[in-house]
Image 1 (cartoon, rainbow, N blue to C red):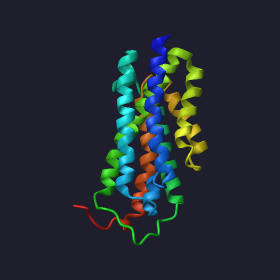
Image 2 (cartoon, rainbow, N blue to C red):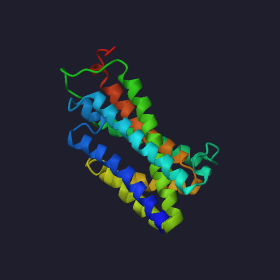
Image 3 (tube, helix red, strand yellow):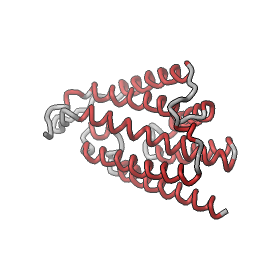
Image 4 (cartoon, rainbow, N blue to C red):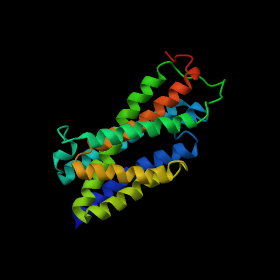
Length: 223
């Protein structure tokens, strides 16, 4: 019993640290790339939020993985994939691009960004999403499946996942659907990588399109 208490206490601890970082960024108006492009915040602060997520969720994933001695298959690159994942990923890219195209171009002539911003953001964002999915689907979901069963594990995973997105009104309900899809593919393939691929497809499809649309803001270098 004590072992379960410690496991879930650690899970909530690392989740809470990440949640605080997300809520702080959201309340400051710098929670998303679109906020920064609109001049509501600075790129370094957004990068710091992403790095905080990588740090907190990364450490939490390692600690919990070792503590529960989880099956390494969940993180193995040798997962048994098929065309379904790539169809869903392709659809996610289309949705991401479409949602970005619907947003107006940032009108902020006094705000400019370094030339290396797009590549730096994409690299850090990719690492962040990989660690993010590892924590939510590779660790949290799997541990709860072992302890509570599939249905309850999915319900709790969706609750924690939606709470992180609650500060963005446009993402609140979409995150519920997305979270269900990500839980589903993780359980079906018993691997975190399908969830990583689909989440990266949606997020980077959206954010790379935003950067291309607002390329006129990329004017100078910090170097």
